[in-house]
Structures are given as C-alpha cells and as structure tokens.
View (cartoon, rainbow over the protein chains, first blue to last red):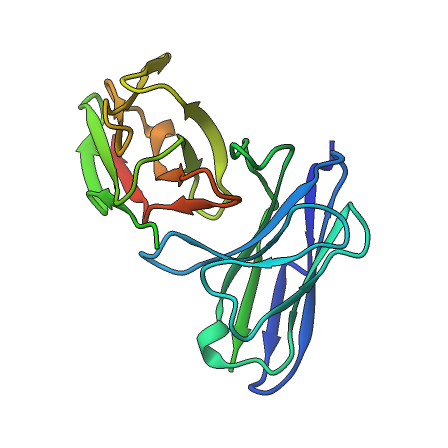
Length: 114
Length: 110
C-alpha cells in the first residue's frame, strides 16, 4: 500500500546548488503533479504530466524542470536553488484529469535553501 | 487565470461548536473537491461535488456546491478535536489542473 512516495523527505541546500526530487506511484495513474505549499498560500501547481513522456507548466513553473520518463515516476529538478524556493513540495497522482479526479498525495518533501 | 478564494483563513472553535468554511471561484467550475490536511501531514481527499446545487454529507460534515457552480462550503457540526487541520477546496474549470484555495485552518479547544 505504498501509494505515492517522495524522496527525499528533507533537504537543505545552499543557494545555487541543484537537486532532484523523486516521486513514485504504484497505482498506474496517468496524471501526476508537483505542488509547492507555502504558509497561507495553499497549494500551487508547479508542473504536471498527463502521461508518460509528457509535461506541462502549472501556475508557478519558473526555476523548476520536470521529467516523466516512466509512467510511475515524476521528477522535479531545481537547477540553481534560490531562497524563494524554500517550501514544502508535494507530489500527487490521479487516475483521471478531465474532469479532475481525486488526487493522492505523497507525504511531502521539505526543502530549505540557505 | 482562475482564482479560488477561501474564507476564513483561520478559525478557533470550542469543541462542540459548529464550523463552516467558504470557497469562491472567479470562474464557473466543472467540479469542486475538498481536502483535509492534518498538522504536519499531507492533503487527503474528502469529497467531490459535480452537480449544481449538490449537497453531500459525510457523518458530521456537509458539503454544498452552489447553484452557479462558482462557490462551495463545508460545514462541520459539533466539532471534535479530531477535526483539527486545514481544509482546502480545489476547483476544476475543465482544464487539466485543479486550483486550490488558500485553506482554512481549524483549531478546536477541548
């Protein structure tokens, strides 16, 4: 019953460093999403994917890149981390996109950029 | 772009009191979803509303979708300490992504 798994759960970076967050789902879902959560601002969509090999921009894509080489994995990359990217990142997956179906979230990855 | 506003941002209640959070969208929605996030946890799906004027109940929780499909509410009757958390609405405007409201953080005093 893994569902959606995110790694790592915690990470501290220095400004300018790069890193990749990995999201893996075992529910055979087509749709996968990366959100960031900041206090008082809810969840904001960074990038999403409607299937293997596809990616699209969300509300706040700048400074991030994503890849979906395998259906079960969705990677979020930060090429040059900035303090403004300090946040909690959530990955989610869904079995449908139009209309939007229930989102299954991972436990989150807390990133601090110094 | 689509905006989803949620009020209030915070709510303190005494255990046993009722609680309501409201969600308003700048555009007509095809459906709306509600999620609960416990402190330190991740959002968990509660329900989805699709039809205009729809009302759904889950035990002490009542969810409504407005007639114009631009607003929604979540009402909790007789709150318990287990209701503590942040409640989010998320609107679908028939695109590929949900837009989340800012959330209402519920705190319950025992």
